[in-house]
Image (cartoon, rainbow, N blue to C red; front, side, top):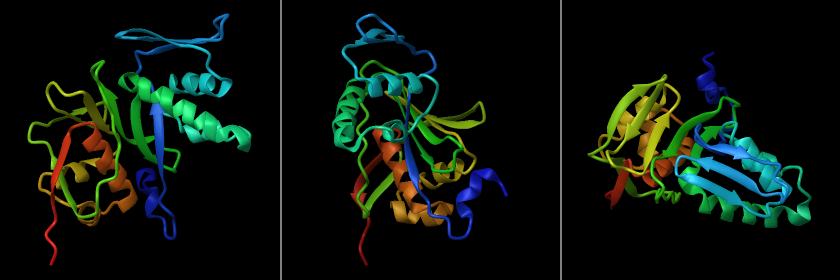
Length: 217
């Protein structure tokens, strides 16, 4: 069986996973005497002061590639995990212009889609699309193949999107015309949970647009 299609196994429950990482050109330096973490980015240095050990470990792992932050939090005591999750979320919100946001499946195969920031003003606001809302690719989007993935980018846009797996092309093709998430999932034969997360990432990255509601019968 093609490992990219492992979600098709009978009875398999599809679960999407939020993944976080830094672009390859970001360096993370730890071990400073004051405990701070230094991020070396294309737009200058960012110092994270007074981080807790979980935050340090999260930033360190993100420098190696996409990671589930929930996995980092698994070893944290229950009475402090929510506070650490909140603090980490607030930090990553401030760092979003140097953070790659990805979505994958719980199959150990890495990201299905990634959104990479291109400017120091990049803002990524992820929100689910209402069930009756239509979505389609931006008319300005440009596509190309790069290192085995399908790249979507709007000239001058804040993000570049990479669909890492072959079945991502089907979703892009289907988004040429306005569709709902449910209709897209049926059309491309992918799990609705994955399509919904992928569409939300495309919208947050600015390579897809929405604005119309589907007509009700």
